[in-house]
Length: 460
Ligand code: BES
Ligand code: MN
Ligand code: ZN
Image 1 (cartoon, rainbow, N blue to C red):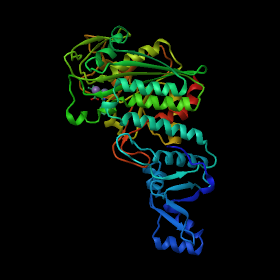
Image 2 (cartoon, rainbow, N blue to C red; image 1 turned 90 degrees about the vertical axis):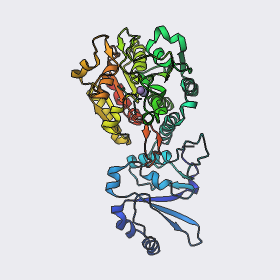
Image 3 (tube, rainbow, N blue to C red; image 1 turned 60 degrees about the vertical axis):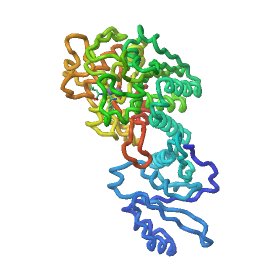
Image 4 (tube, rainbow, N blue to C red; image 1 turned 180 degrees about the vertical axis):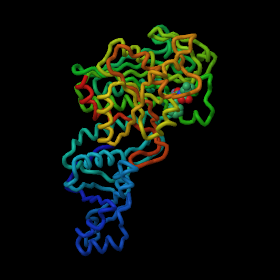
């Protein structure tokens, strides 16, 4: 689906015009076309489309409005709103676009074709694009496809995306790219991954730890994604309004799997490992309780002050395993806290790292590929907040100060051997549709990571 068209012979030209450049553009037209543009009232508002006919009435070409400087400052993927309104058929962009613009436009176009069509027919708009000159079309397709995987995984309801289905999806990804995969599930987790077991055992859908490896040479990169397939909150049950969207609580897993897809499809020179603790945080007589003290894989004890702070528990055991064979770089992604959503909203991906060059590389890449991120601090002075006294760690510090930071500090306690650790506290969801981003699951930070990866991995 999300591919470029190939028969360039059929393609009609789509010219793009910014609102500020409308007069210059009109001046370049023939008298007939200028009259047509004037009388049609085309003023290059964002998403406006004007079609030009041939004398015989057939379609010759189109122009799309890219909106104003304000539209550009406020949005991204703007061409997606044009693509969605074009007649079906094959389109090409002018050959004089600069490479960055062409690449963003090409990606935006493919993303505009994304549909979540599992539960009802949802045909894409029929306007297809010839890959613009100067871009790496295979690369853009691989990235769009990885993003679509992330969206599909998040959008699929928990009924059909439990721990078992998340394992199946991971196996499908591994099969496609010749990755190896190992899964530990159910009671077998009790001794080696006690906190994954504790969080997941209340559900009849067995918890598991998915461990995928790919690539024979290059720097070692380990990704860890929170795979809470549904988060009821556990015995500290969430109120209805807070539980409604919790099918997306495997958004971290969906993001790392989408990122893994991109890395493998692009054949990046890395030794990749992907770990996903997949559980359902459910309620039953054998659910873990507030006040329980769990002993983690690392040996650190954790006092449970809120069963709804489950993500850090399952991630901690996965991070511990990852840290036992320290990679050059470890990245975790998780829909970890409501505090992150309150702090930066749904568009920005908050990330943590103590490594300034990685942060700089990521921020530059994020700007290049329109995948915004925002750096947050592993703020050491807050460490006492996660130390309850009765155990080594507290999973839910009272008071709720700096909730995303204290969650990040909690995770970092389990990464002691790996030289560079980066953590993302993402939202994973677009609450209202924007160009190229329909309401629903969305990748965050993964396109920026792909773009930054060569620099991050060669730095060391
Ligand atoms: N999955 C939630 C975090 C979340 C909530 C992400 C809403 C995005 C939107 C997580 O498991 C959770 O419930 N966190 C608690 C932690 C608290 C109990 C310390 C939270 O953020 O309220
Ligand atoms: Mn929770
Ligand atoms: Zn959760």
